[in-house]
Length: 220
Image 1 (cartoon, helix red, strand yellow):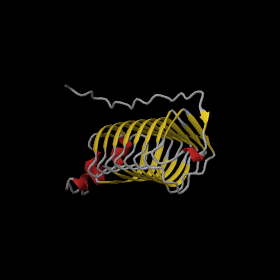
Image 2: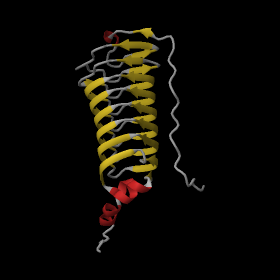
Image 3: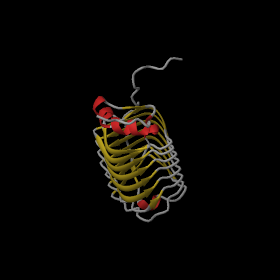
Image 4: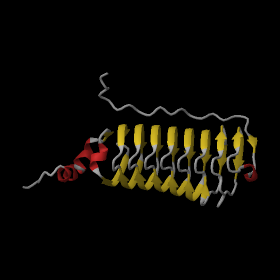
């Protein structure tokens, strides 16, 4: 089958969460399953909540420093104004998730599955997506120090109005990954950009790095 010559954008529907019942921080336990709940202003710092399942839930203004959510499942769930200097979501499943207006220091989502996920207006120092599977993921108006996609498989991923000090794509496998809206100051392993889309200006900026990568000497 012949592939389209144009980059396919991610398909991420907006969440609609209605009639949510209030929940308390104590309702969240390792392996617990919550559905249709609203959690506001909760402090989850230092909690081990591994294997937690949240379905059609909303967490608003939560603090989650060094909170462990490893192996969790977030389904049709919104995280709004989350404050998390260190957050462990490794080997988790995020499907139909929105993360908005959040400040996260180190976000570990390595070896996780992200499908139909939207990050909007977030500041994230380091997002670790190494070995993750991403499909239909959109980053809007986000600021990063480092985006680590090393070894990740990503399809239909786009950045709009984003910036990062460093982008790592070592050994990544990209398909329809739109980087035109990501102003990255440095890129690690240019060969990992195969399958990505750049705008003309960024391609020109990277021309010397591409040449060096291919062993081409530029003189004169």
